[in-house]
Image (cartoon, rainbow over all chains, first blue to last red):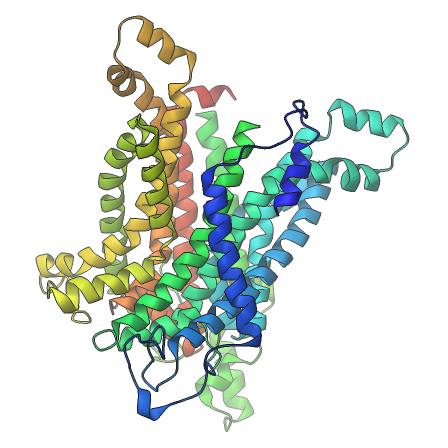
Length: 285
Length: 313
């Protein structure tokens, strides 16, 4: 992510000023995200305990050296489950952003570049969809096609397309008639070359914050849906459904709810600080 | 006036698209509602009779038209699970959710405006950074987690309310509002953080404008320039944002109703999704969607009302 952004600021007018000044939010956010990502990646291969191993002799234990975040109502290690749940949220959010970004960029680029009736209709539809909170529509879609990780990714992915399409479209519409594009056209560049080689790289500064915001929205949507019981199905750990369990045992095991909630908040915080830092350096540039 | 008329036309078109999508979405559901209502043992004659009674034997555009006109006159169909009019199921739940949304919105407005002005007028750079960082942290906490923390802290520890013991407004208004306060606050807190961030950015942006320098050179203090000149301009984007928040708060209440066991529309929606009671789901979705579209329309009109410059565009 870092190499990417330094690259895009290079063709700036003040290219001699080699180093881009980043806000401290960018570094703090980057550090939190990096640690969370690392933990998630490690959890794919190794967790302190099996996230699904039931231990009747160690029910609802408070945090200790043996169980960093304590155990839940059937004696499962909360730290291991939080890691697995974060992994699930992570993978779902990445898939959702990939789907949304890929189709969003495609639709936005074509609409913004060519304009016309198709653009007007698609923009209208995108506006109608973005008017709704993703969770509401995702709940409806999942109620029709059924739950499970795959369907959640599908539902949220489709719902995230318009937000990306909108941003990319407005960038393309803005840049379309600028001189360097006309110059490229005069040099005989085809539409595809202009779209992908000349305009698309210029949309990256506005696209990156959108990606991080989209990632956060996906994490939050998935957690909310699983919390409502319409999402990831047990026994697969998910931060949302763990939160739902944790609420039942709030009185006797408050650490369960707190560790799960803080994990969700940290996942979101890291990326929102990153996005804030990116936007600040965009404004400065 | 032309602006309002244009926006109104867009409102009608969007409402039409939304209703069409809501109608079509529930047509592609596999399985026939008659199986659900009559069971698998029903005779073909009974199924045909029921299909005729429900209007399922008619062509799709006609069914859409019938559904739309019935919906607009208040007939939202019949629940599969309870065999009672959807309208009656909604009538006592809708006010509770509306009350929760309204309360949460009021809290958001009352707290975010002064906090935002404060954030926008902090001059000490360290304090400013601290304030912004705190704002980002609060923004990142999901509302349902705040709700659970509130249940633990104010419900179980300080015993200010009993989680799960909701008292309807039909019994006692004060007890009902008292119970709804913490859920409303839980939805409001992240929204407040977002609004504060927005207002701060807006104030800082306006403070750099030429007219502020003019005001300052005429002897206004920074404070006077802020309150007399900057604020009314800085509030414009925030008001639109607050209007959009209204829609977000309503959906936020779906999750929060679950946390605090409030028998509102959100709980009904979830129960209906689990029972595959589609007429109820459809009705709730259309109502929420229409609400959001209308709120956005009001925001656009308000925007134009406060900022005459937009008419020129």
